[in-house]
Length: 251
Image 1 (tube, one colour):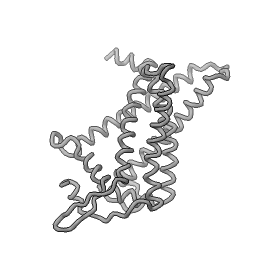
Image 2 (cartoon, one colour):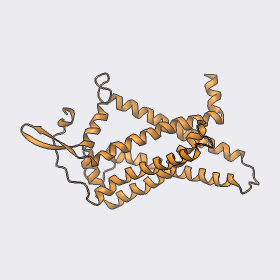
Image 3 (spheres, rainbow, N blue to C red):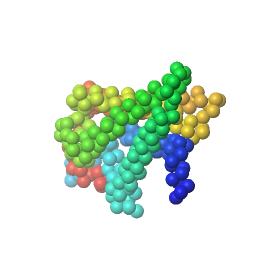
């Protein structure tokens, strides 16, 4: 335990924790955008009591997440385990990043000379800003489209497609989501690049490839997220009629 405490107290330990939690969160974001893009993959036609219903793939994906781990685990338990891991990662990530930032500010000399360090400082400042915006967005997003606490348009638990459609019909909501996705792209690019550096995976012969990966991944993920509100806003996705939600569990 003493070794763990010393490791956490050190700058190297904090940077390592920031990198590992960042990797976990990057994996989540990549998986999350893949799930969101299921709004474009269509519907399955399911017959119930002789009546055909169109069940969106993204609704089925939402049910899949709720059933993850079954039958070994009860429904929702696997999802809550994943949520707890993500919550712990977010808290740890934010904590160590703030601590590293404060330690860096304390160590900075008063007569700071204009150099490469100045640009690195600006990058760090933007990271703190973009990170704060993304954190605020995550909280809003959960209250908006997960719990339905903040309602913009009709909301029904489990009706993922319709909830997205109802909310992104409002231009200001769609625009807000797109703007934040731009912030996310900036944050991911610097975060992924820093992750490779912290884990010692960077080197002169592969830094160009790492930067390219960070750029493509960050821009690709952000565009993937932004496409969803834009598609609903401009009416590029079809209306889907309501259906009995017990069909999700039986399919």
